[in-house]
Image (cartoon, rainbow, N blue to C red):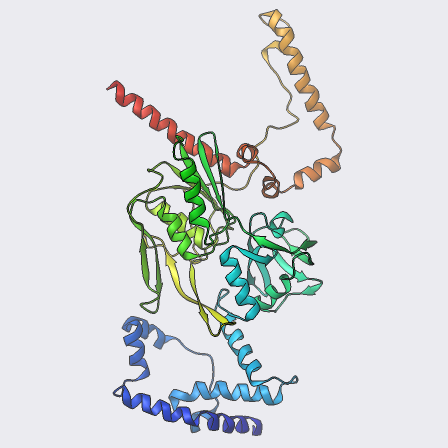
Amino acid sequence: MKTVNNSLRKSLLFLSSMAVVFACNVSCSGGTTKNENVKNAVGSSAAEKSKKRECALVIPDSIKKNVPEEMQYTVFLQMILNMIRSEYVNELSEGESVEKTIAGMLSSLDPHSSYLNEKAFVALKNQTDGEFGGLGIEIMMDESFVRIISPIDDTPAYKAGLKSGDLIIYIDDECVNGISAEETLERLRGKPGTKVKLKIKRADKPPFDIVIERALIKVQSVKAEVLNNVGYIRISTFDKHTTEGIKKFLTKNKDKKLYGLILDVRNNPGGLLEEAISASDIFLDGGKIVSTRGRTEENTKEFSAKKGDLTNGIPIVVLINSGTASAPEIMAGALRDNKRAIIIGTRSFGKGSVQKVVPLSEKTAIKLTVAKHFTPSGECIQANGITPDIEADWAEIKRPEALFVLREEFFPNALDADKRAENKKKSDEENRKAIEALSKKKSDKDKEEEEDYELLYRKMPLKERAEKDFQLSKAFDTIITIEKVKAMAAKNAKKK
């Protein structure tokens, strides 16, 4: 009790000048109370909600008796800081204790708010520029461990086979349980060429170790090509080059008669809001793109597309999955709600919050969640994600290897005996391959069955993926079906 009173005394002395300032502020504002200020700032309904919230923090009686009500929480916080500085087992400077207080407070708000020290601030700026060092993964804290939202295309993490949903439970043989996101990032980062050992927990499989070499990562956010008269645009992240990359592809192929476009944003972990808006604008001829709603006017905004669809209204399919987070969800929602695209895949991640980076100095900043994203139809992306129009999960399309062929020529009295002999040779060869497939060693077959489709597709050229990746195949089929229906409608219109 003596310690508490001493800390309280120090806190009161430290804040005595603040009390004078506070008194001046009250008199200058014409007696406006704290609650009235809240009403003026965010509206009466928001103020009423804030009144109803109950705080579990209990202010000590010693503070209640000696400190004005409007300053009790401030004094209590200062008292805790004094106790930490004077009695914590390891000596902390005033700056260290304040820094840790800020970091802890922000990280407890939500998974995306954080304090950015010098290293983290530099890394964030480099990432949005499209060039940074490390492994190339987007992460968030999940039940005291590190959850991978998504690996970025062609980065060390991507090439090593890390997947959306993987849990990192150990870094270099040290458990990550309980450490902050910022500390985790610092452990994952390092000089290009150095290695880091991770222990990964994936779904219901036993944990496994993987060693990854760090690299200087230059992200190519847009890769695109044309296959079967369909434009395929892979957007791996939304950095400052994304809109430019999409426009470059469209300009290059403006003279080709494309049946449609596939925008593949699967496992895209997000990026810049401005790029998500400008990239969506490419495919729209007006209409809303996204709105952000926060507690202040500054954080409550609505963004709309300009007139002029650069693709002239050709059909669009957007591919999404559970690794599609934030910026690509904005694009998918905007194109869907404006009746501009068909969404295929699985429900997206649901990261629909807006983070504002506020520099505290040239070297540090805070990242604070200030609003939520809403699609043009008013659907909140946060926690809901984007639901596809056509559900299609990961699957492999392949003809069964051990399939015996039975055709007309197998029957002794089949017609056209001259053709029967030639065709039977072909069928016999197919059956021989089927028998060989059945004779495979069990270990080989087990290994084959355990192969991860998603990881296999990463190594394939587009033409091969389009044949085997069920989601991608579905997208191509949808575009071609739309083109055939249009052609049939045009033909019927000419007849009339």
